[in-house]
Amino acid sequence: MRTAWLRRATVLCALALSACSGDKSRARESVGAPEGGVAPQAGAPEDTARSSAEPKQASPFRVATYNGGLAMGVLKYVDERAEPLIRALAEQPVDLLCVQEFWLEEHWQQLVSATSSTLPSTFRLPPGHEDGGCTQQETDPLVACAAKSCAGLTQHALLPCLLQRCAARLTSLSPDCFNCLSANPRQGPDELARACLRARTNSAAGARPPARAGGAAAVEVYSGASGTAVLTNAEILERDSLVLPSAIDRRAVLYTRLSPPSVGELHVFCTHLTASMEGVPHPRNTSWQKDQSAQIDALLDYVDRKTGGRGATLLLGDLNTGPAIAPSISARLPAHYDRLLARGFVNPYASQADAKCTYCFDNPLDGGKGTRGLLIDHVLLRGFEGDAYGAQIMRSSLTIEAGKKKVKSGYSDHYGLLVTLSRRDS
Image 1: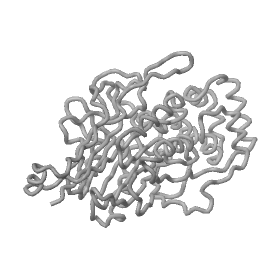
Image 2: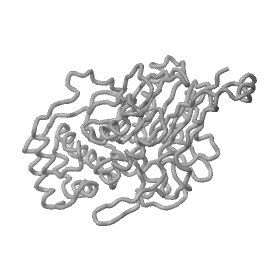
Image 3: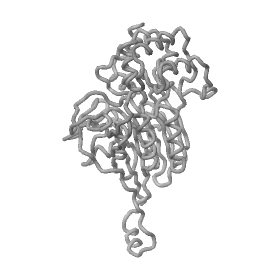
């Protein structure tokens, strides 16, 4: 039992990383945010003549996925990146946005506020755990160890220290206590311990819990938040969700049915699948790859159940799987990616000649170098009759103040992907 809990604690260091290890070389920079299409002026004689001979281009519907990398306690500069990231994301020309790794409620509320006029319809699961679950007998030894061995460390520097110096204290925590203590890694152990000893109001009280594939809940960091959400300017006609089988951090697929006038009815599935975290022990004596495989099984069954195998369907998010594309994109669990294609999905961006990595090893947030990367953030289509073209967003770097130094960083450890959908009216 203690060994299993140590594995769980160790995994916390990498709980939100979208891809781990791999070839540390990277792809070249791509263009910035794509420009929106401009409709032709009505009434011009040449336009009238052309419209009688050719199909008319309907207004586009712009769909984007973006992993914000706001994994407090895991990735660097979360506090410094959050505000400029959210501001830049709110300026993107999108009609539907699927985000991942917005783990903390404060970051989600900031995004909702920043996009309230452009993407007013939203869907996000509430956290799964809100009540404090620690006894003082559990927290006192951990707080004492942290004060002795990890004094003065915060955020991403604190967790590795706790795992190395206070592992025995972590292994003794109950699941409820572990879940609560990992809710907001910004705070120090003593602050978290005090908060988790107090009963807090459950914001999801009385709400019907989402369906869960693969059994009951276990240890889940960030209070059981999935970090995934949908924002759109289209009316959400139906919404549903499925919590996927996972370890340590909650994974879920969010379903929304939309019917924007420009493209007609769409079944939209927004998700974030588990990464293949080489070198990180799995808490259940299995593998991260098997977790992702089980998630794909549950996801595909859910897609077919919600759509009946019919209609225009979008599957988007950080899928942590993708193809190899010469010369600079390496494959990530390609057999898993092929299973998605075998079920009828197509990837318009990956088929473009200018396709580039979305998780690139030279991203300044990671401080890497090279020319290679992974294409693991996708907008996949099935049953859509029309044109689709992709371009990357949120690729630029920014300079932030970290402590007393100015450092160059990416907005996230991922770049975003925008796919413009257009139907042709006959």
